[in-house]
Amino acid sequence: MKEIALLGGSFNPPHVGHLMAAWYVLATEPVSEVWLLPSYRHPFGKALASYDDRVEMCRLAAATIRGLHVCTAEAELAGDPMVGYTVRTLEHLRERHPGDRFALVIGTDILGETGKWHRWDRVQELCRVVVVGRQGHEDGAGGRPLLPAVSSTEVRERLVRGAEVSHLVPRRVLAYVREKGLYRG
Image 1 (tube, one colour):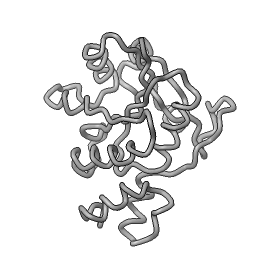
Image 2: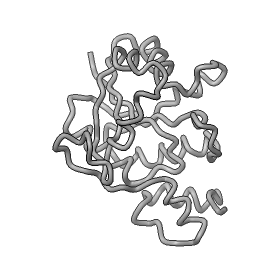
Image 3: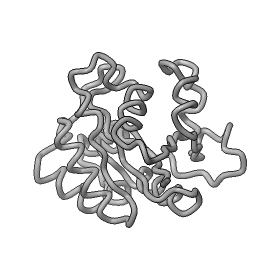
């Protein structure tokens, strides 16, 4: 039975912090692969680039790391009233992949918010939780290295201003963003 780590997010757009987290989990955890899991829609209703664009950007980013893939499970649940809830996505994945185990990757920036998640108790029954340290959110890191405090919000704001982002976004993703005219403001 293999274990697959799920790294979920809006990926609006995916950035180097996401790749660093994925690589860290692949290098330090007993998982066979990491799946980037783009949210079908934002859980708090925030505007996002199209799901298809975000999936494609994730594919471009994932192509740079062996063992990193993209999972479109949330699109499979598009008509489900519980789409976007981690517990529902995990139940769906367990149904689709009964021979696999799952681990959920969360950053220390999210750790304090899990009490607000729908059925966090059930999430913990369905998967193992892997915590990744993030700069600016040292509580809960437990001695783990802290990944840079890069955010998609910062990347989008810089793109709107025409500021440099090549040090924050994978080359292939940035080329796609420019080609499609995403995040212009």
